[in-house]
Length: 390
Image: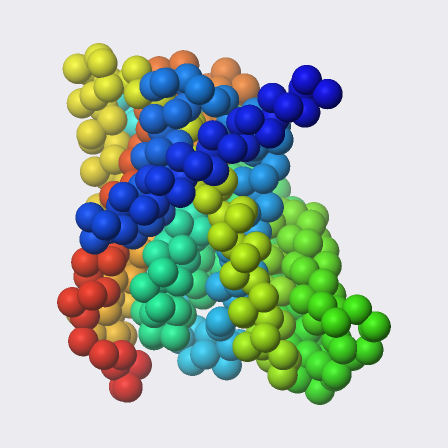
């Protein structure tokens, strides 16, 4: 019982801190997610030390970001994503190539061999769309063309990042690359997305009445939440992030006639669970890294490369839109968040990274998550209305 009481106290501290941080950020005209991340960093192990991101918190954070991406999918129609398919493909591909090339050269110039350098670079590649999605949702701009491009590109980005990680892990282990195996993985991922996306949305359009057949008046919500969790798990079986499956579940649910009702019913769940994801993200920031001037210089260089390469890749990939819209897309693809942290953990466990490099990569990932929301909000507030030609 004492253990349960400790967990409840931790949950209270994290949730209350995230609420206060989010409120202060919004009063300062910044997205609430910025305050939630900073609040997590302050109460985490490297500052006040009130809370550690242990297993219960990590689980709540994972559920929070899964539900967030489901809610984002709920506001996104498949037809809208198809209309920006070419731009999303360009952004997804260039948003992987530029960061990987730039980070590989930086790591090699910092003294790593080529194979470890590519492992380091893999942490620079994958976008953490949860942070960008929250900003887009807060600003009410999920229906803009730029938002659709970002969300579509994030799916492509995740597939390419998964394949790239498989390559660098094989190289680090001394294995010979098997192009056939990588091709099979790619086809499996694309097949999963195609079947779930096209078949699921068609079924939802034709037979949304079955959501209301159970006696429970909340059955539409409970059924689509079960679909969300099931597809989140299934996507991990195909080597993709759980949030991709959750996003697809939301896209499917968006085709039902209960869409507006579901959007309204999701709000209390999001208010309860998503702050845990952003607070836990902030808790993983190791502030001690900033005490060493040399490490600080490396961190500044790594963060600059991470930001510039994603912005450039996203901008060039979205040039079919007007330049300001392309810049918004590039900035929206910047956050690395938990994706970079996971890859850094793999590198540390494999003995590729020292504790310092691990800390730098984690700090870089979280700094990109921290600087993106205010920049993206500033650009979107000053952007003209959506471009009809896009």
